[in-house]
Length: 228
Image (cartoon, rainbow, N blue to C red; front, side, top):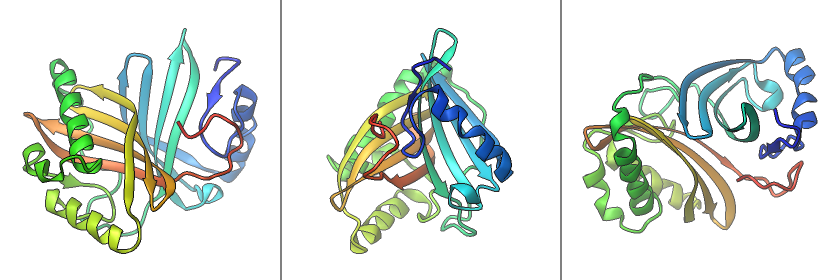
């Protein structure tokens, strides 16, 4: 790590010492990590992982996205999002299973533009009626949503009926490699800040699969760097 390592995890103090202080705690807890996907672009690297024996962090099993910025061969900055893994899901898929192979490296920019259009139009609400043009087969790993664009729309509507209304959805970090596009977004849900870390897989110009980790952003943090 760089000496001035910048931390965005709300619970860990910034700087190398803040992260080093966490190591004994993790070791004593018996927590382990399984990394399922690694996606990189430029100086950013995204890890899609499962944390097991993670009760010390709030749940027995957590799904996680970690984003690292690398500078001169050292890790200089870190963002993450964590979410408990439920026993059952609406689609029958887990939060981290599915394909892992990176393909279509020559289509990275094209796929990035497609996904950012989807985020703007559908998730951001600019033109939700365009949803069908982005996907024909939409395999869902969000535990609360059924497969398909219809499942996404129905789930979003049900969430709103429960009082969770999204009024802001702004991408802050975008990392694309071939057929995978990761987007971390700063959102406002019913007047409160949330973080949405999403990963999409693209095939032949259409979005075909989606994973995410969603969490509210706490008001108080162990540093002044913010979530993003």
